Length: 81
Image (cartoon, rainbow, N blue to C red):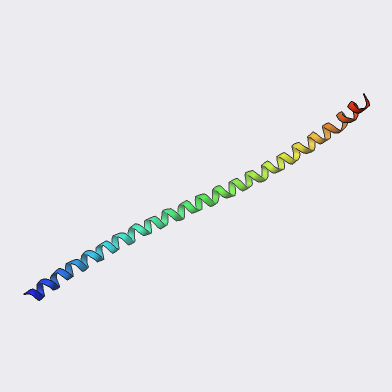
């Protein structure tokens, strides 16, 4: 009788362990999918930021060029006054 009780208890514990492992595995898979989705979102955000930075640099260069073109004649005129 004791052997059946011990084997039965062991079987119940093993079944519970298998159930828990299955639940944890499912939870880990869902977490992995969320991490993968978030990683893709972050990669897109990084691409967008790099593009915006590049546009900002181009705009700054253009503004600097325009300011230079305006300042040269103004400086010449001011120097001759």
